[in-house]
Image (cartoon, rainbow, N blue to C red; front, side, top):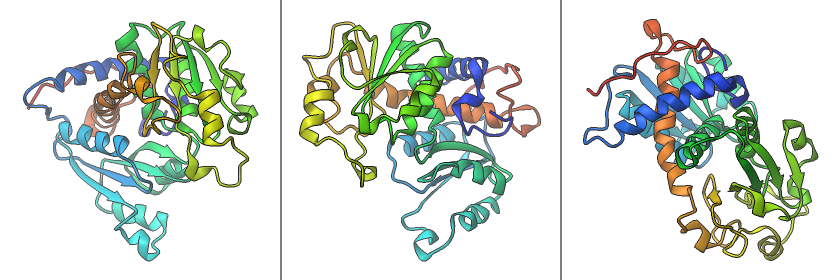
Length: 319
């Protein structure tokens, strides 16, 4: 990660990840207060630019910025001048004219966040670019796991489902491996790219051995992106790769980045079980994204904290 942007999880390194997780712990405490605000980013503007639909990521980034007392503007493709034919670049240049401190960007094309970083003077946070990366999802997943299980080193994590179209999987594998986890990816052969093993994970095409996992991380079957790919039918997917009560073992925990296709990746009984961390992940999103915004924007002189510099700052006090 550069001093000004969060574009990819691999840029952070273990030290940068540890710093964000520690910062997120302090902001998680803020969430339990009657007044859930700190004055850290008062007078700053954060723009959320979402060119794809989102519920969890968009709302948690908006809450994170507001709880840091920033002014927040959210722009979606639907209802914006993009529908009139305005280019992505001109949209970014227009929003940059308002001199925001940060732009949080979600876009359907890999590399979109890096382009925004070239076109704007603002700090840029990648909230998901095509099938490429989703670094803050990886961070909140680590935060959730450590809070629930007390450690990350040595955890055996199985990531199951539509790996081919998943930015969550790519960022997640790198983050988990960086923190000492053993990662296995599993799914239909047409939905698990061969090159994924280059990230340091094992690859399987069936659930044999999943009972030894500490963490089962199910991925959404992205039917909107599967056009033209020979993929299993939903019935076959459910029979061979769904996690249900028969396949879930005591002591295992289940995660999913959302939205869940109930009855496809996970049976409803699993989604609603005490072993599910899905709601915990959503809750963690606000604290973790507060931590990312804080580290990027609350540095000396207000020109951006350096996540890679290793300088700790005292957590902000409530307004």
